[in-house]
Length: 246
Image 1 (spheres, one colour):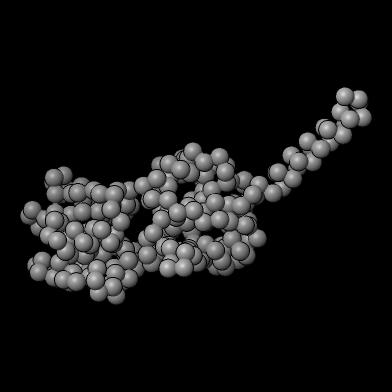
Image 2 (cartoon, rainbow, N blue to C red):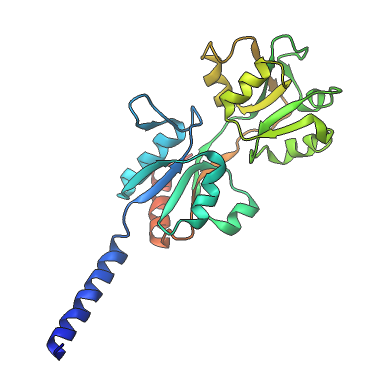
Protein backbone atom coordinates (compact mmCIF):
# COMPACT_ATOMS: atom_id res chain seq x y z
CA UNK A 1 0.00 0.00 0.00
CA UNK A 2 1.36 3.40 -0.99
CA UNK A 3 1.51 6.30 1.42
CA UNK A 4 -1.34 7.95 -0.49
CA UNK A 5 -3.55 4.87 -0.20
CA UNK A 6 -2.65 4.56 3.48
CA UNK A 7 -3.58 8.21 4.10
CA UNK A 8 -6.90 7.77 2.26
CA UNK A 9 -7.69 4.68 4.34
CA UNK A 10 -6.95 6.51 7.61
CA UNK A 11 -9.17 9.45 6.56
CA UNK A 12 -12.00 7.04 5.68
CA UNK A 13 -11.73 5.40 9.11
CA UNK A 14 -11.81 8.78 10.84
CA UNK A 15 -14.89 9.86 8.86
CA UNK A 16 -16.71 6.65 9.79
CA UNK A 17 -15.71 7.15 13.41
CA UNK A 18 -16.97 10.74 13.44
CA UNK A 19 -20.25 9.74 11.80
CA UNK A 20 -20.67 6.93 14.28
CA UNK A 21 -20.21 9.31 17.20
CA UNK A 22 -22.55 11.88 15.68
CA UNK A 23 -25.24 9.30 14.85
CA UNK A 24 -25.12 6.50 17.43
CA UNK A 25 -28.29 4.93 16.04
CA UNK A 26 -31.80 4.80 17.47
CA UNK A 27 -32.49 4.76 21.18
CA UNK A 28 -33.98 1.41 22.17
CA UNK A 29 -36.96 1.83 24.51
CA UNK A 30 -37.66 -1.28 26.54
CA UNK A 31 -41.14 -1.70 27.98
CA UNK A 32 -43.55 -4.32 29.25
CA UNK A 33 -47.33 -4.46 29.22
CA UNK A 34 -48.57 -2.52 32.21
CA UNK A 35 -51.78 -0.72 31.30
CA UNK A 36 -52.63 2.11 31.55
CA UNK A 37 -48.95 3.25 31.69
CA UNK A 38 -47.47 1.39 28.71
CA UNK A 39 -48.86 -1.50 26.69
CA UNK A 40 -49.17 -2.97 23.21
CA UNK A 41 -52.42 -2.11 21.42
CA UNK A 42 -54.38 -4.40 19.09
CA UNK A 43 -52.61 -2.92 16.05
CA UNK A 44 -49.16 -3.59 17.52
CA UNK A 45 -48.35 0.01 18.45
CA UNK A 46 -47.33 1.13 21.94
CA UNK A 47 -49.67 3.32 23.98
CA UNK A 48 -50.41 4.42 27.56
CA UNK A 49 -49.92 7.49 29.79
CA UNK A 50 -46.18 7.08 30.24
CA UNK A 51 -45.50 5.73 26.74
CA UNK A 52 -47.23 8.71 25.11
CA UNK A 53 -45.36 11.20 27.29
CA UNK A 54 -42.06 9.50 26.46
CA UNK A 55 -42.76 9.63 22.73
CA UNK A 56 -43.61 13.35 22.99
CA UNK A 57 -40.29 13.99 24.75
CA UNK A 58 -38.16 12.08 22.25
CA UNK A 59 -40.00 13.42 19.19
CA UNK A 60 -39.56 17.01 20.34
CA UNK A 61 -35.93 16.34 21.26
CA UNK A 62 -35.29 14.92 17.79
CA UNK A 63 -34.07 11.60 19.16
CA UNK A 64 -34.98 8.53 17.02
CA UNK A 65 -36.20 5.53 19.00
CA UNK A 66 -37.44 1.97 18.62
CA UNK A 67 -39.76 0.24 21.11
CA UNK A 68 -38.75 -3.23 22.33
CA UNK A 69 -41.05 -5.36 24.47
CA UNK A 70 -39.38 -7.42 27.21
CA UNK A 71 -40.81 -9.08 30.35
CA UNK A 72 -40.68 -6.69 33.31
CA UNK A 73 -38.40 -8.91 35.40
CA UNK A 74 -35.75 -8.85 32.65
CA UNK A 75 -35.67 -5.18 31.69
CA UNK A 76 -33.16 -3.94 34.26
CA UNK A 77 -30.78 -6.82 33.55
CA UNK A 78 -31.11 -6.29 29.80
CA UNK A 79 -30.24 -2.61 30.16
CA UNK A 80 -27.19 -3.40 32.27
CA UNK A 81 -25.86 -5.81 29.64
CA UNK A 82 -26.94 -3.93 26.51
CA UNK A 83 -24.12 -2.22 24.64
CA UNK A 84 -26.56 -0.13 22.59
CA UNK A 85 -28.05 3.11 23.86
CA UNK A 86 -31.14 1.94 25.71
CA UNK A 87 -33.76 3.33 28.07
CA UNK A 88 -37.00 2.27 29.70
CA UNK A 89 -39.71 4.74 30.76
CA UNK A 90 -41.84 4.85 33.87
CA UNK A 91 -39.45 3.68 36.59
CA UNK A 92 -39.19 4.88 40.16
CA UNK A 93 -35.80 6.16 41.26
CA UNK A 94 -34.06 4.33 44.10
CA UNK A 95 -30.56 4.70 45.55
CA UNK A 96 -29.62 1.23 44.30
CA UNK A 97 -30.80 1.95 40.76
CA UNK A 98 -29.00 5.29 40.68
CA UNK A 99 -25.70 3.41 41.08
CA UNK A 100 -26.35 1.36 37.95
CA UNK A 101 -28.35 3.58 35.59
CA UNK A 102 -28.87 7.14 34.46
CA UNK A 103 -32.18 8.83 35.22
CA UNK A 104 -33.94 11.64 33.42
CA UNK A 105 -35.83 14.36 35.20
CA UNK A 106 -39.29 13.14 36.35
CA UNK A 107 -41.84 12.75 33.55
CA UNK A 108 -44.98 11.70 35.46
CA UNK A 109 -46.30 12.02 38.99
CA UNK A 110 -48.51 9.14 39.98
CA UNK A 111 -51.44 8.73 42.31
CA UNK A 112 -51.19 6.85 45.64
CA UNK A 113 -51.20 3.08 45.85
CA UNK A 114 -54.51 1.42 46.64
CA UNK A 115 -55.46 -2.06 47.78
CA UNK A 116 -57.67 -4.40 45.76
CA UNK A 117 -59.52 -7.27 47.39
CA UNK A 118 -62.66 -9.35 47.01
CA UNK A 119 -66.05 -7.79 47.64
CA UNK A 120 -66.71 -10.27 50.45
CA UNK A 121 -63.48 -9.40 52.28
CA UNK A 122 -64.57 -7.43 55.33
CA UNK A 123 -62.64 -4.21 54.88
CA UNK A 124 -64.29 -0.80 54.34
CA UNK A 125 -63.57 0.91 51.03
CA UNK A 126 -61.91 3.82 52.84
CA UNK A 127 -59.53 2.95 55.66
CA UNK A 128 -55.81 3.04 56.49
CA UNK A 129 -52.93 0.79 55.53
CA UNK A 130 -52.14 0.37 59.23
CA UNK A 131 -55.59 -1.17 59.84
CA UNK A 132 -55.56 -3.35 56.72
CA UNK A 133 -52.14 -4.90 57.24
CA UNK A 134 -52.76 -5.56 60.91
CA UNK A 135 -55.65 -7.93 60.10
CA UNK A 136 -54.63 -11.33 61.55
CA UNK A 137 -53.78 -13.88 58.88
CA UNK A 138 -54.20 -11.56 55.89
CA UNK A 139 -52.45 -12.90 52.78
CA UNK A 140 -50.92 -10.23 50.57
CA UNK A 141 -49.58 -10.71 47.04
CA UNK A 142 -47.55 -8.21 45.10
CA UNK A 143 -45.19 -8.14 42.19
CA UNK A 144 -41.46 -8.76 42.49
CA UNK A 145 -39.53 -5.49 42.24
CA UNK A 146 -42.55 -3.33 43.10
CA UNK A 147 -41.58 -0.12 44.88
CA UNK A 148 -44.12 0.52 47.62
CA UNK A 149 -42.42 3.52 49.24
CA UNK A 150 -40.88 4.07 52.65
CA UNK A 151 -44.21 4.37 54.49
CA UNK A 152 -45.71 1.11 53.20
CA UNK A 153 -42.35 -0.66 53.44
CA UNK A 154 -42.38 0.09 57.16
CA UNK A 155 -45.89 -1.29 57.60
CA UNK A 156 -45.32 -4.38 55.46
CA UNK A 157 -42.13 -5.18 57.39
CA UNK A 158 -44.32 -5.90 60.42
CA UNK A 159 -46.48 -8.44 58.57
CA UNK A 160 -45.38 -12.08 59.13
CA UNK A 161 -43.22 -13.14 56.20
CA UNK A 162 -45.36 -16.22 55.46
CA UNK A 163 -48.33 -13.90 54.75
CA UNK A 164 -46.52 -11.93 52.02
CA UNK A 165 -46.28 -13.58 48.62
CA UNK A 166 -44.05 -12.04 45.96
CA UNK A 167 -44.76 -13.16 42.40
CA UNK A 168 -43.64 -12.33 38.86
CA UNK A 169 -47.22 -12.14 37.57
CA UNK A 170 -48.45 -8.97 35.93
CA UNK A 171 -51.33 -7.08 37.53
CA UNK A 172 -54.07 -8.96 35.64
CA UNK A 173 -52.68 -12.28 36.88
CA UNK A 174 -52.67 -11.09 40.49
CA UNK A 175 -56.31 -9.98 40.23
CA UNK A 176 -57.32 -13.41 38.92
CA UNK A 177 -55.58 -15.10 41.87
CA UNK A 178 -57.45 -12.87 44.32
CA UNK A 179 -60.74 -13.65 42.55
CA UNK A 180 -59.95 -17.36 42.92
CA UNK A 181 -59.34 -16.93 46.65
CA UNK A 182 -55.62 -17.77 46.61
CA UNK A 183 -54.77 -14.43 48.26
CA UNK A 184 -56.74 -11.72 50.05
CA UNK A 185 -55.29 -8.50 48.74
CA UNK A 186 -52.86 -6.88 46.33
CA UNK A 187 -51.44 -3.40 45.81
CA UNK A 188 -51.93 -1.40 42.62
CA UNK A 189 -51.52 2.22 41.65
CA UNK A 190 -54.83 4.10 41.60
CA UNK A 191 -54.44 4.46 37.81
CA UNK A 192 -54.17 0.69 37.37
CA UNK A 193 -57.08 -0.03 39.69
CA UNK A 194 -59.33 2.39 37.78
CA UNK A 195 -58.24 0.85 34.46
CA UNK A 196 -59.08 -2.69 35.56
CA UNK A 197 -62.30 -1.61 37.24
CA UNK A 198 -63.54 -0.66 33.78
CA UNK A 199 -62.71 -4.17 32.57
CA UNK A 200 -65.72 -6.16 33.79
CA UNK A 201 -64.10 -9.55 33.17
CA UNK A 202 -61.10 -8.81 35.37
CA UNK A 203 -62.92 -6.91 38.10
CA UNK A 204 -65.81 -9.22 38.91
CA UNK A 205 -66.32 -9.51 42.69
CA UNK A 206 -63.43 -7.16 43.42
CA UNK A 207 -63.31 -3.76 45.13
CA UNK A 208 -60.80 -0.94 45.53
CA UNK A 209 -59.70 0.11 49.01
CA UNK A 210 -58.45 3.67 49.40
CA UNK A 211 -55.80 3.97 52.12
CA UNK A 212 -55.98 7.50 53.49
CA UNK A 213 -52.63 7.31 55.29
CA UNK A 214 -50.62 6.34 52.19
CA UNK A 215 -48.76 9.29 50.66
CA UNK A 216 -49.01 9.87 46.93
CA UNK A 217 -47.08 11.78 44.35
CA UNK A 218 -44.41 9.18 43.51
CA UNK A 219 -42.54 10.37 40.44
CA UNK A 220 -41.64 8.22 37.44
CA UNK A 221 -38.52 8.69 35.32
CA UNK A 222 -36.91 7.51 32.10
CA UNK A 223 -34.22 5.06 33.21
CA UNK A 224 -31.26 4.66 30.82
CA UNK A 225 -28.16 2.51 30.66
CA UNK A 226 -24.69 3.98 31.05
CA UNK A 227 -24.08 3.72 27.29
CA UNK A 228 -26.45 6.64 26.64
CA UNK A 229 -24.26 9.70 25.91
CA UNK A 230 -24.50 12.70 28.21
CA UNK A 231 -25.57 14.82 25.21
CA UNK A 232 -28.68 12.67 24.72
CA UNK A 233 -29.58 12.79 28.43
CA UNK A 234 -29.19 16.58 28.28
CA UNK A 235 -31.54 16.76 25.28
CA UNK A 236 -34.11 14.62 27.06
CA UNK A 237 -33.94 16.72 30.22
CA UNK A 238 -34.08 20.01 28.31
CA UNK A 239 -37.26 18.81 26.56
CA UNK A 240 -38.81 17.67 29.85
CA UNK A 241 -38.22 21.17 31.22
CA UNK A 242 -39.65 22.73 28.06
CA UNK A 243 -42.79 20.58 28.35
CA UNK A 244 -43.07 21.53 32.05
CA UNK A 245 -43.39 17.92 33.19
CA UNK A 246 -44.65 16.31 35.26
